[in-house]
Image 1 (cartoon, rainbow, N blue to C red):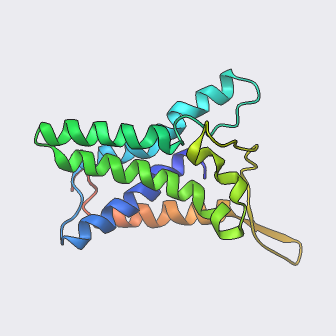
Image 2: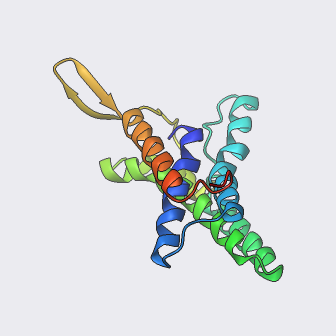
Image 3: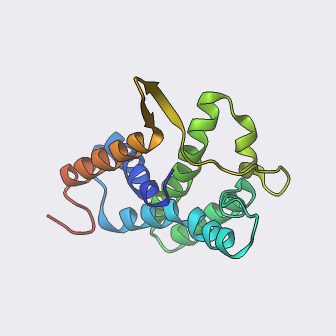
Length: 167
């Protein structure tokens, strides 16, 4: 998934979670969702640029880093009476990992999931573009799905009262 699509997917997940309680997302937790959803790429993409041969998914995408990071954020936010921020961050971070794992799981490309336990497991080079359908010389890739995620997330965010910007 393109890095900037992750916050949109994370917001959809967080909005659905808040709607289970009958409430719309608020500004603070929405910011936490965005930070959590971007963090794995904010860690790994600079490493990909700086280190030749780095695949762009390792440290920040590893559950061996994600779980302690989430627990630390959860502990600090609960201790400060801001548990919803911890929930938002957790939903954002985990939605990033889930969305990156979705396609390899769907097509059975389990070797691409090596990043989840890096450095214990290896991660082959990430190809990025995944073909959904090829018909009549037209190729529809996951980029179309990502564009749809962005459009739906913006519509849901608008319906939720545009947390961060306000009404």
